[in-house]
Picture (spheres, rainbow, N blue to C red):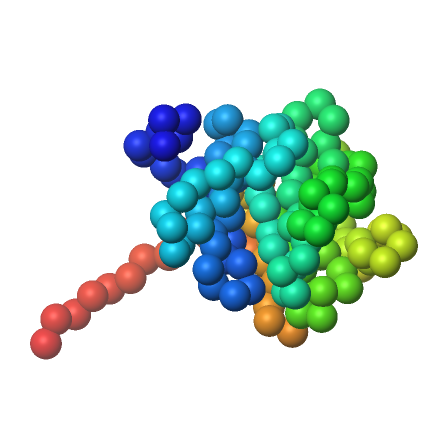
Length: 173
């Protein structure tokens, strides 16, 4: 595919629930692509310019994605209608669908609010779940990492820092 670079290090892929399609967001181009594994054809998801971090719903009917830049949003693509709708208008990171497909969990990236949140798909209601204000989190290349366990409980990488120095004495047998 001519529009795609040969070297990919920022694809952020996700599998369709049936395992037949791979979706990925090109971080540099900020476009979402679909790769059909049967035909090996790559296609651009409609109106996905400026979007990244695609996540497929458990039932395969929807795709969540993040608009990054000056107008950050969490958006939802309906495969039936081929339309995008807004779920949340704020900077977010690490979106993940709940197992039942009723929520999308995410890390709020608002400057003064460090919170784990979720948005209910049915009515777009955002719920603030856990404050991370006093939790010293490790900062990776793209910010403080957050993950979600299969039971929808949050996982966070804690920063213990480098305030302590340890010496290890290694004795060989």
